[in-house]
Length: 132
Image (cartoon, rainbow, N blue to C red):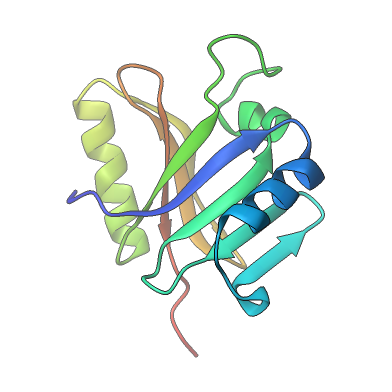
């Protein structure tokens, strides 16, 4: 895997407060901001995204019961070229001493998986769905 960090997701305690802060900090057009019930995403011109996500949900993503000390406050995301590449990277994770948090799963957003490195840091692997 040649790491290509395409998304950084950080955990926040107050989504609205964090949105107000980062909206004021980033010089970004309204059409480059996407929001849902549980997240806000800032889409930058170079293909990089910065996402705000509730800390409790990051804990769940990381396989933790609750957001306690040691729960990651962020997730690094690598954009793979295909679902097969996601699965190949997961094999390397296991061979290198990491752990799979979530096996590869297909969703409306594409094919994704989560893994934990040898130090407990969480990565998301994702492959966009093929264009129709």
